[in-house]
Each structure stands twice: as structure tokens, then as C-alpha cells.
Image (tube, rainbow, N blue to C red):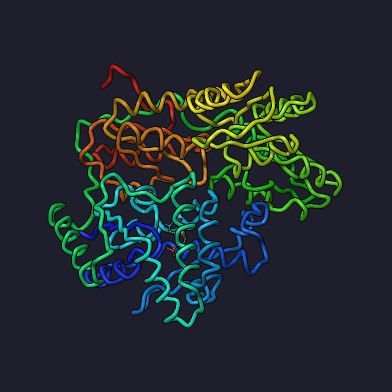
Length: 533
Ligand code: DC
């Protein structure tokens, strides 16, 4: 029988874990508790003594985390850096911290990468908050489980009691309520049902009833999908595959890679501060040349340090200089320009609003050039309360121009003077426009680029508004994508995706359609043309 991906999402204590575990058992599938992964991250932060909002500690900490899951009769065993932490991660303190840490995009990307790896071959039941919407939007069976808040609080209270963890019912209820709100309101992959998820209210169902309901629906889905053992990976003949006009490396990234490749490795150690781009191939290439990745500025002394295109904070520049480092500054000139504008406007006394993701390294760097009046506002966030007559608005270079316009409209009624600098890089705007135009006319779009890359994820999000979209990091991930039903296949790629990867993906799609010719250069891939559709 075909082995599919079953996604079960829903708020805390809605019955997901127990149902998912038993359902997996009945189907002979693997059960994956994704919440446990966020809990393990929160536990690591606690063990290292970091506050959850201390991003400068949490983000590097991710490099030191190794999470593994093994399977036992009683459910998942969670291993954190080689230690079984299955019990330790179940306290109310860790529940609250897990919810907070899960809102940090870098944490999510790392966990989602792991979840996709574990689930990509099917035969899995994954439970969490965003499995059907974000981790596996292509999951064949999707459920969203809900239950009344009081019912959930009673369940969780009894669960804690059975484990010997002291708690008060009222506190459990408040904790669940706060967690529901936080999980549903975060900007990246919030808790919400996928549009094609089946809603299951478990308030008045026994566990057996819940499991049977999901089991029957899943069996029906499998039967509908047919008897094949793996997704149909062949692409029919007569397909068109094309590349968006503007895709792949942007000028800033190309320049940074070139500067790193040209860096002299002699007597001094050479480091890039963070990965030069989110691309394992390039990082490996530099590593082999003797250019290593450092994550902490304070570790660097008497070295050569390459600053990547995102830029760094003012304090980090000062620390590097104080510690006698030679700096190769590959900050993208468009990003540098935002630093200069922010500094100048701040010196002139303007409060400045930065439109961007406050956890993104570019924005963390940029913000440090302002002062305590500098505010960061993310996409779709309500505008800040402003008690000033004048205001300056600038943007992270990879934001969407439409969203910047929306923020202008929201801010303008509240101030007398609004100075807007369109600091969005032209390449970003062009790439997004090209993706939208292509998605409108395609049956499916494949977006190629790192899951950690925010501009790649933005392309995937935009494209998914117009047609089915798969975000993949490399050509191997096409194995899990069924392209058989699509005739017009569009490709696009983020600013940090190398041309070689686009070529590999294109060649694999050709091979799947029975064409054994391959292309060797990006120029050989046809570009999207409106009239070709
Ligand atoms: O399912 P749980 O209670 O163990 O999850 C703990 C927290 O982890 C939850 O409050 C939100 C977060 N989480 C998430 O953001 N995405 C998931 N897929 C699973 C959990």
C-alpha cells in the first residue's frame, strides 16, 4: 500500500499526541512529535542559562544542538546532544519556553529542516502546529484537532498529576490560553488549519473514537490515491520547464562570495562571521580552502574576518577592531546604504521605523546604527504607536514593496511628516515580480534555495498564492515531489542559490520526463515567456 504523510495539527492538549501515536501504530507508520523538538531547544537554552529572547545567544546555540528521535512502544524518545531528555522537556516551564523559542525563525528553519528530512519518504504521522501548512503542505492526509479550552486544561492537569508534576488547574488553563495565543500569532508558520485539513473536535470524543475516525479517513485517502508504493515521480512528455527571468544569486551575494574566494589564507587564520551564504556547497568549498565559519565575534582575535552580505552590528565592528582583526567587509552595498540612511536620519533627530524581520541578521545589524527610538515592524504587524510629528521609514532590502506601501498607508494618518526611503533592493523586487508573473501562468512552481533563506521563503510564499509551490533546497528533494500532473513547470531561485543547483534541478526534471539530454549552463534553460503558455 502507498505510504503517505499524515499531518496532525492543533493547539496544545487537543489530543494530537495520543491520537498520532496510536494512528501511527495502526498504520505501521513512524510517529514524529515535532513539539518535542522545540521543547528540546528550550531545554538547551535553559541548560546554557540563556533567556529565550536573547537572540545573540540562542542563534549560535542552534549550531551546538543535536536532536535525535528514536521510537519506543510508549512514543518518541527525544535525544538532546546524546542524552535522553524525554521526561525533562515535559514541565510547564519548558512548555512556555518552547512556545516562545518556536517563534524565532532561525529555530523554526532548523527544526523544519529536520522534520522534512524525517518525513520525506512517507509512512509517517507528524503532529505539531504547522505540519499541514508549512512543513509538508503536500501531505496527503491533513487533520486539525481542536477541543474546548476547559476540556484541554483538565486533560493537561490530569496528565501532569499522573507524572507527579505539581500544578493548579487555573494555572494550567492560563498557560494553555497564553500558549494558544502565542502559537497562533507568531509571524512565521503560525498555528492555523491548512485550507484542506479535516477539522476534528475531540471535546466529546474518547481516544479510541478519535483514533478510529482518523484511521478510517486516512485509509480512504490512501485508497483514493491508488496502490502505488511511492509518489509518481515521472513527468509526462510535452511538459514545459522554464526559469523565471530574474532568479538566483543577487549582486551582493555574488560579490561576497567572490571576496571570500579571493581572501588570502597565509599565516593568519581566516573566518567568515556566520556562513557566507546559506549554501552548504560554498561553505564547504571555503572550509577546504582554510576559511572557517565563526559564530561569535568575541572568539576572534588577530585574524582575518570576512563580513557577509547581511552586514553586522556596530558593536561587532568595534569588537573586531579592538581585538586586532583585519576586516574584509563584504556587506552588500545596498545594505550599507541602509546603515548610512539610518545613522544620518537618527543624527538629525528622526525616529526611524525599519520595516523588516527583527530576527534577521540584516535587521539586527541595521538596527544597531539607530538609537532607542528605532523601531522594527514586521510584515502585517500593526503599526507602532507614534507620539512624534515626524518619522522616517526604511526597509530591510529583501522586503516586498507592496507590504512597504501598506505600512506607509497605516503610518501616514498618525504623523505630519513621513519620510520614506525605498531601500528595497531592485533585484529583490524584480525577482518577486518575475515569480508572481510566472506562477500566474504555471501549473506548479519549484522554488530552489535554503530553507533558512528569507528571500527564498518569501518567493515560495508569493508563488503559493497563485499555484501549487514546492520549496526545495536541492535536486534530491525532487524525489518526494509528484510532478506527473503538471505540464507547465516554473523554476525560480533565491538570492543565495548557486546556478549549479538550478541546473541540477532542471536536469533532474528533464530526466524524470524521459529526456536524457542535460544542460551545462544556466543560459541553456529556457526563460519563462508569457506567450509560451
Ligand atoms: O506540541 P507541544 O505542546 O509539545 O509543543 C510545544 C510548543 O512547540 C508549542 O507551544 C509551539 C511549538 N510548536 C511549534 O511551533 N510547531 C510545531 N510543529 C510543534 C510545536
